[in-house]
Amino acid sequence: MVPVLPRAYGGQMPDGTATAHRYWPKLATTLIEGYGFDTLRRDAMAGLTVAILALPLSMAIAVASGVSPDRGIYTAIIGGFLVSALGGSRFQIGGPAGAFIVLVAATVTRLGIDALILTVLMSGAMLTLIGVLRLGSLIRYIPYAVTVGFTSGIAVTIALSQIKDLAGLKLVGTEPGPVLPKLFVLGQALPTFNPVALVVGAGVAATILGLRRLRPGWPGMLVAVVAATLATTLLHLPVETIGSRFGGIPHGLPMPHLPKISLEMLMTVFPVALSFTLLGGLESLLSAKVADGMTGRVHRSNMELVAQGVANMASALFGGISVTGTIARTATNIRAGARTPVAGMLHAVFLLGFLVVAAPLASYVPLAALAGILVVVAWNMIERREFASLLTQWRPAMVLLATFGLTLLHDLTAGIMAGCGLAALFWIAARTRRTFTRS
Image (cartoon, rainbow, N blue to C red; front, side, top):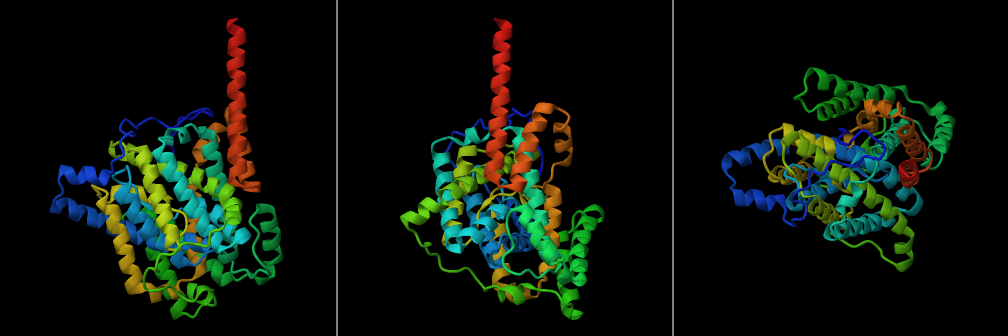
């Protein structure tokens, strides 16, 4: 995750929203400015590059979230297309994100898949409403230490959630969501440890990190997953695959349909939908702000939230999971030469083509390989320098550790509430002290 916030517990995201009042997608703006063949060529190459990255990553995020891998691809196709077509950023790439793994997995475990789809639908409606009411700027006042704290807490939780598939462990019953019970259950399953799975997963992680250093232009995730899949298939390695757990991936998109809706279920998922909405808004605006910093452009924050909301509602109708702006894929899109939102739309089209043509091949992908991808994702999410810097100042350190600890040991909502509450108390105390000093 790229840091873009001031290094202070009470900091807020930089402004950069001079045109945020405009409800006008950046796609329309770029088309009005003129769109030629050279721009299309650049957008197509960028879209293909991002699609190659998004394919294995979307499946890995879905599996780690407790759903089948096809739901991750549906999310990237539907959500990715709409975020680019309707959004307030020229370069934002939408899709499933690692930050949502913990929330999605907990929702599926506790309430089931239908409740998850309803939660995504509700959070999409909330994001749209926040954008329409021009409330996007409120999200920008989340303290920086809180952002670093919950991001790092989520990253550690993601890494711990991959131990099962990375080590090939066989659990009795469902894997718990909270960290301490999870570690206890994983410890009980240690006798089922599969060293071959660990070699596959660690090999994938090492390949991704190695190619990033030696051949940064190569699609490291895809190369690593293809190599692991070939080795597993040709050598008949005894590891679990997508096919053995999920039975494969369909050749195309499902027909859209509404989840089961009742007043009781709406009341049950409402608090969860609030968490999805807060995290989705934060991640999307952070990603758009990173794109601004890389390109010198300015995104329209409220239009971006409207697009994210519509994308989530559409993803839910197709059985997908949460959609948000993704920093790694957005940065890849920019570095690959994207010029307009058409690149993001084409990335979704290319993903659909992969799904139609190569769906049967996904059955051979080892789950340990997907776990290896997410270990790298978790490592990249932790803002190590920012974390260490905040620890040198006692007030930001208190906010950081409260957010990090509660996110890790309880959940995201508790972490954010604790961090924001503590930061507010520090701010009030500082204002009160200054008032008494002046008087």
